[in-house]
Image (tube, rainbow, N blue to C red; front, side, top):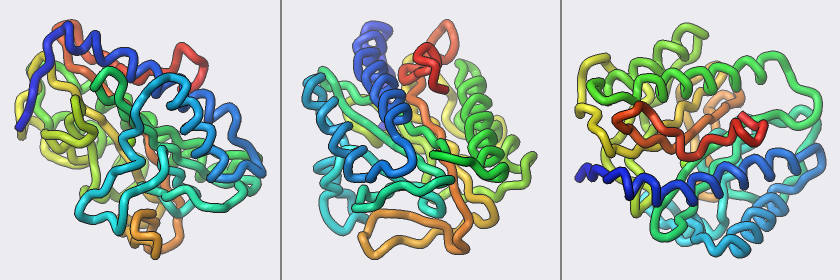
Length: 260
Ligand code: MG
């Protein structure tokens, strides 16, 4: 069921959005060559406790998950792109890291993801990250009253295909509200002008993610981490966006923190 939020409810979602933005900016600043993925998770958990926020991940146990997730954020490295379960691994020079983080505050959820390289970047990794960010910008620009879900999907796909990347539509954007994953599903590819009409008060997580040379994923033995079938690297950009009468409002915007 698709739920629409009042302007007052969207205001009430701002603290969660701001906390997710600040946390990802902090984690991005503190993560470097040698940082252990478990330390990133512990730091995020500490920030959650101090803020009185509630993790959306730690007890998360969907039908495809082997067991409750048990950590408070996803750390996907190199050829892992989604749902990376933090494990004992110290980041190496040139690693491409994606952090995906969601909490609720006062009962409202915000969900966002960022990709970056620690140490010396490879040009092809920076290009992939840049494409996912521009695809997210295009998705946000299309998140306006009068458009349809397909316009967002098409905007994402247009950027990806323009840069030569294939798209996997098994995992994409979703409604966000009292729970992390609600309707509607927002595929990362689709036809312009099709699908659910975007209305004032719709709040969605938009999350383009691409792999360098494939659109096929395999699941790690941990039952969670999704990585490319061919070992090529992936990147992921996500924001929680409210569609308002004044245009798209990026609730998890972190640009004011100097981290885009
Ligand atoms: Mg997310």
